[in-house]
Amino acid sequence: MKPPPLRLLRPASPTEACALLAEAGDAGRALAGGQSLVPLLNLRLAAPEVLVDLNPLTELATLACGTGALRVGAMVRQRTLERDPLVRRRLPALPAALAHVGHLATRNRGTIGGSLAHADPAAELPLVAVALGATVELLGPKGPREVPAAELATGFLSTCLEPGELLVACTFPLLGPTEGAGFAEAAPRAGDFALAAACCRLGLDPEGRVAAATVAVGALGPTVQVVPEAAQVLLGSPPGPARFAEAGALVGASDRLDPPASLHASPPYRRHLARLVVEEALAEAARAAQAARNGSPSREDRREEEHGA
Amino acid sequence: MTRSIELRVNGTTHRVEVEDRRLLSDCLRHDLGLRGTRVGCEHGVCGACTVRLDGQAVRSCLLFAVQVEGQEIQTVEGLADPEGPLHPLQEAFHRHGALQCGYCTPGFLLTAAQLLDELRAEPNPEPPSEEEIRVLLAGNLCRCTGYGPIVRAVLEQATCAAGADPTEPSGEDRR
Ligand code: FES
Ligand code: FES
Image 1: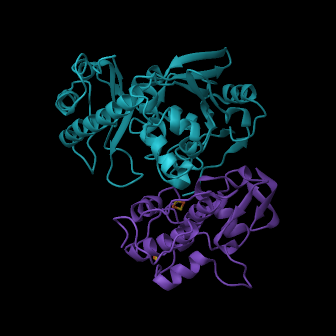
Image 2: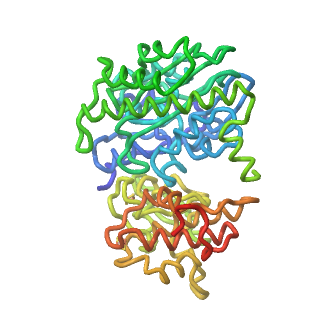
Image 3: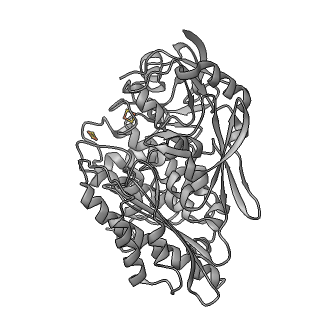
């Protein structure tokens, strides 16, 4: 179908965008890449009278990698981040996850901020942001504030954004020299919504034992779920398949999950997939952490070298 | 509310009057008469409406015409010079029998065209595997062909674009 009648406003600055959003109130929506919002308009599931188009705001499309963190402007396109050589080297779990976000044509247009603010529980970016301990920057009528990514989503497609507030950037801490992260997802076809997805982070001590762990899953409840019990069983021993299976089983059985039923997957089947993706993400995180610790190049570096890039 | 906007499509500038809610897909088809761009689902799922915006493949059913003023739009009509030979991808689709009704074809062509351009721009491109081509094309639906000939046509042209010989099997999944 066609979108309902609307007015598309093009602000000249993020502050003006906030003012326009505040003025429009419930009748207004921010338009980023439009890869989730415009389908809702075309299906008439949403009918805002005013769209505040963020696409002209180039100041929101900047990518900056400092010593300890990567700051990604809200309007950075998913594919830009996915292909950025520095990001591929410093935070490979992020491009690995982005490769699962929709398709080439939607990633060319879809943005980091749009994906985070849409807060779809099956989306990859919110999961990675939570697992890696990212922070989002919000700008609103009362000024800027920062919120941990884990507190951004408050429920299915719902966030803590106040009326007139705009998500302007997301900052991902870079991994330490003995840390690694991994991402894994199960979906019916490439680019489909995940039936279960996991992002895990592992840190090793000087003896190669797990000293820190984060296990987070997506598509298994109304928001991203962190499962500390699963991380707990990994601590103190070297990473390995037996421990990963134990952690996976704990996630699969966890009360924290509330997997939705869908045409493609029943809740018990999603729990089964949860186990598998957690095991896979942990194996990848361990491999990356060990590579980092040995100072050997990560898989991405090797790829780049092989390809002469 | 309507506005007058200037759109650059296939190298030509057009002035059109559109409502803010006018989708780029409808603007191309109805206002400019460029019906090569197809509309299948109109909510971003099928890829039939794919065009290129400054070289990037995008869903034209998820863009408003008023958003793309000043950007360069390429549709299937602009893939090859109307007086000259077909674009190599079009020629490969023809040769491989990669279309039946043809409804999905423009979307596949414009998606694949971005890959070809990117491979040509890389200093040492790696020829993509069949698996990578299948993933690339997963965002475009075809109800007729069963995808096999489309994958073969794109794989062949991507291999050429990467400077390799498409008749030479390399990599385990090359048929
Ligand atoms: S018509 Fe645009 S994706 Fe189907
Ligand atoms: S050729 Fe008919 S839909 Fe693809």
